[in-house]
Image (cartoon, rainbow, N blue to C red; front, side, top):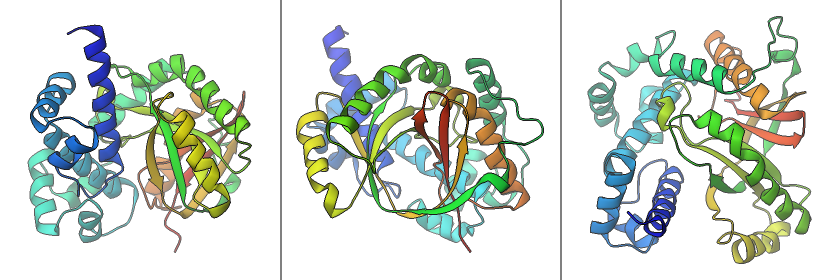
Length: 306
């Protein structure tokens, strides 16, 4: 495949993946996604399978089931509620879940650690320089602040995909981050956040398949309408930015005196331990890190406020 052809299809496939991640219940069909990326169904289906290793329909099915598994792991939603969140009836979710994970949702929920989870944590430790906090001085519930975030729109880049996504994040994030800070500065957006995280489900998705992102999150409020229009007209295409809605909700905010690479592993261990011990339960699968300074970050964890 010519380099120009590969680059064309890589961008189209990323666009399709972004559309899927902004469609949690899987309402968009193959024809609609192909139309949205301006490709024929046959060409899109063939190239996605060739370059991603599975069909787009199978990808969306796995994404929804992995989202369900993430809810089972870190929320206290019922199986019925989780089924609805992922676009299934409870009976169809139970059946699909058993076929993919080879066990029932209830028994899956009770497992202490998952195979992919262990591998992801081990690979992350190798790829990054994680902060060691054995006494839980920094990563402790006492340092979290309960806040409510309004609706946001996230404009983001998917970082280059390979078999070592955290290493790629460490190597490439800075370049993308500079572009996003340029947007924030030029448009004077004090309420915006530069954030990073994964589109996937940390304890469930195979490490080699995980997609990392960095983006700018802008409030969905009237006073930011002009900024949204400027991003779409001046920056979205040149910077290859995709979009994802981030709905309003309750978050645990945890400021930490370190960069994203040092914060990533202890952040997940803190979240997992807090959910498993019942200190809080997550309302969604996607926590993220706000990049506030060279050696400081803020962690945001969506949680179920009771």
